[in-house]
Amino acid sequence: MTSTTAAEQSAARAASALLDVYARVGPLFVRGEGAELIADDGTRYLDLVAGIAVNALGYDHPVIRDAIDQALASGLIHVSNLYRTEPGERLAEELVARSFASRVFFCNSGAEANEAAFKFARKWSGKSEIVAFTGSFHGRLFASLAATDRPEYRKPFEPLVPGVRIVPREDWAAVDHAISASRTAAVIVEPLQGEGGVRPVDPEWLAFARELCAGRGVALIFDEVQCGLGRTGTLFAYEQAEVVPDMLTLAKPLAGGLPMGAVLLTDGIAAALKPGDHATTFGGGPLVARVALAVVRTIAEPGFLAAVRELGAWLGASLAGVAARHRRVAEVRGRGLMWGIELTEPAAPFVAAARERHLLVATAGANVIRLVPPLVVTREELERGVGILEEVLS
Image 1 (cartoon, rainbow, N blue to C red):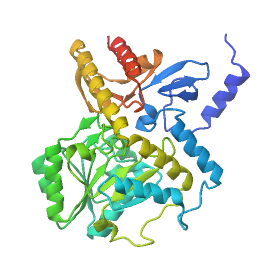
Image 2: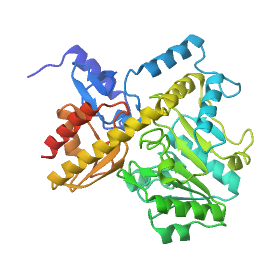
Image 3: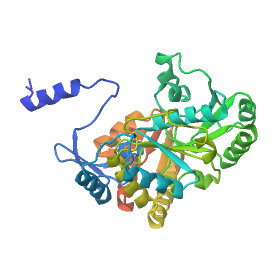
Image 4: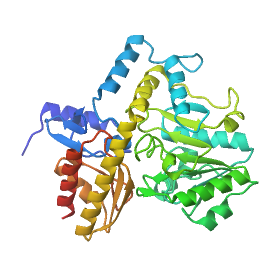
């Protein structure tokens, strides 16, 4: 019988102290470099999950390290939003300059950003209903969960926030019927759905929804928590659809791995809000804002985005080739460096098999393998990853 060492027993005790709301798997990771995670035994794993689309600049990127060093040198990690600090103001200015928005609100996560956007829409419109769509994922808080089309997440916590409707995605008649001039405060949609199976949404349908919202006094919210900030090959996904929202939510990659979310909004909606209407203690603090400013400026560089588009085109073509060679692949879809491989059977066993071969990928629903690598991943690393996927699918 094999006895456990003191170190193994200590590790087991530490792991057991965590609440089991995540089914954690795999090794204990202790370091990261570029697009690789390194386990405590020194094994390197090619990471095409990137913290679920968070680590856009990968691991140990000098831009992030330098920004953190500067923040620590200033001595300002937190001040609260009772007072002014420069990093948050500079970051807001940067996001306004690079987007449709006139104002920015900072918070700590994507779910918080969506909750804030719902509140802003209700205050601005004087109406209460929120319309979301099938396949959507907008967060795990009560209003954002009500707008999320995942029954297994919703049911244990019902009743959820009332006044949220989920209607069929890309159904022209359904969205026309759902958007009411008298009831609807906002429509929320991901231009490229993430958790719902990596599904690009039809730009023509988005334009139709935009027209309906404008004509009926309804705020159009684009949730770019996962697909924004360079993931699709442009700084914002709405740029490719050529449809401009009234509000846009950001989070995952914004602060390079530190917790940060944001709502970008027009002057028209901002004018309805006054001090005290909403608040957050930590949002936009000096440390996270300084890092986020460095991340946004790095990703926004034209050469950086061009490289994402080039790598994304190669990855899409390579995955299409994999699909053509394997019957269990039903469809490949995505944009930029955000791709889903829909299988004819559950994806989890193939994700596990890839991990055994030192490749990290994730699921997006029961049957979809999701690839959201760091945006700094190399062509050679993607070739290695596609090769391992080909092995496990065989």
